[in-house]
Length: 635
Image (cartoon, rainbow, N blue to C red; front, side, top):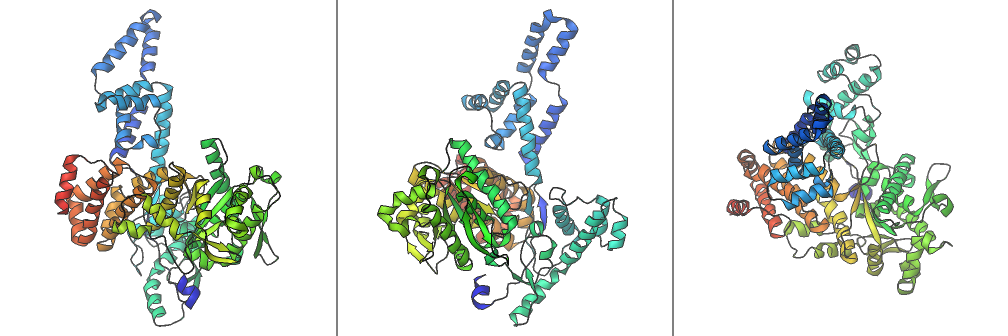
């Protein structure tokens, strides 16, 4: 992007890897089977009641006593087995167990006895409701999309890969009708549009026609390599919009063209504004529900690539928090962000700490100025401070920081600098205390931007806003790359909430908004991380498809292990089951370990090293046998 902006460079687009559904595996698959078994089993209460009706009410107590006796002498009940599987899979935080059930697990050393005690504590309706929540969570896991493996530049997709792309695009949940199996088979095997339409159901013609068009565009992937060579030779490459097939549609195809982004003077778009407002209100409401009070400040990460892909949803989140709307001139260009009256907003104005990536700072200078303008007007608005937290904090800072400093809300690296350097420290292991990572982020991002200031260091203002921040809102914009896939998320979002927590003396949760989903529902960071690790890194389907890519695939696995350490150091994410399952899958599985060692010995060495580091830093508590085995392998 910088090369295009500064030197008119060509950006040649490429396709994403084929999509796949996460499915279920190991304990998760076992759990689904147990839930099915539970459905087939009549309840104990039902058995006793039916028998009592037949034998007479006098014998009810005897029958109930007999039922308990049978239960005590039999193997683990289905309910007990379900709770054992929940604990083994680390699901008790995502599908929350009752306090009584958790207490049963904590008070008994024997797993089977603890599971039975927990099941008795949740008997009857409570367990049925819990089982329903489990089914819902498993369905969410099973249907989660991820990118399978890596894309090979200039290679057209196979029939199986075409099916993966089309199944994800026409999944029935995005307003696009799901394709029948007959139509899908015909399209993936190269049927013409006319023949494919003959095989489709009534009312499916439009979807089949679009699917054939997308298939033909995907088969033009060979242009990627051809046009890259042409661009290197200085030839003209046809321009095209960048974006994501699932979110932006077929207009981003074929790949291999010189992509452009968007007009920065039209940010946010109407669609982005609508989604951003929902995200802002949902985030405020979630924090209000959690604490009983409105958050005074919410931080928002504004990243260049995310703003390009979503047409400015993160900008819309900021506007939603402070209670402002974009004003457009006749040509559609945004010329101002206007504050809504407090009566119309219906809640206090939330102060917004805007953290910019270097690309956003440099590519969207007009948006930075418009945001600075609206935040300064909010700071000086004639409104009661208890209803306008921007003004409240401005008044608190005015004496020590002056007018310009007290109104500063937009921070980034110093002009010309990029990145927090947190990922460099994590990769090198050059940190002792986790507080160092938060401090590294803060020292790199303490420079204020806006009208009249282009990188003025204002560390006191930044720290003051971090102290009052209830959370951070982070948007994710891609199925291909999530929180656990690249280093930038923990190096910025993780490190920022680390600094917030260090200043406030508590753990601060970030809120994650997935822009690829229709439903806008912020997730707490730890829950989002647990879901991603289950559906990707720990998922045999993801692992096998990635490792099959050879050296590049092994490198991707290695990088995700480093990111796992990064999340532990910044966001205090430490789940034993993630490390337990990870070490079994990538290190102790002989076939997998051999593939990794053969394709990329340094990547495998890093994987083993990260498990040892997690143990040393207290993120994981392996058994002595596992610890010894890892140290032996590393040597």
